[in-house]
Length: 132
Image (cartoon, rainbow, N blue to C red; front, side, top):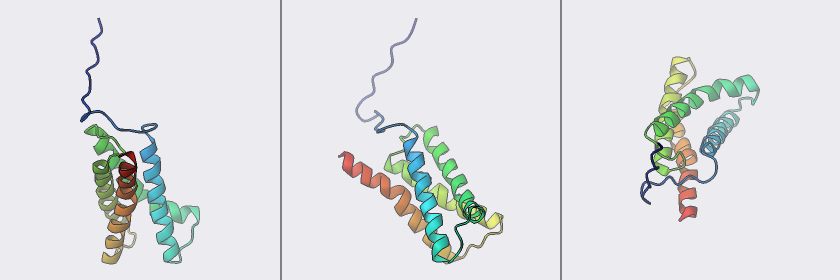
């Protein structure tokens, strides 16, 4: 005997558009853009080892954010999900840079928080406006 699936009210219905994984791809592109722009602005090369060395702490932070959001069953494309992913990406990314011996100055932390906020939350805000 199977139970009927519960009907979701309009306030609890997921508002994902497209495959559930697409926000992860957009976030990864945003984090990669942040790393590329940062490395270029500091005249660092775009060689694969250099990119990966700069990228990995922020990807780990993003993964923690995505796991947190999916754990509470929020749609990954929601603005509030973006806020969680943003903070996780920035905080964990900076902490992992410190632990791994990569350079971290106060100005870097400020730029990291602002740029990742614009990139990770920004695309979600624009998508939410377009959906309305």
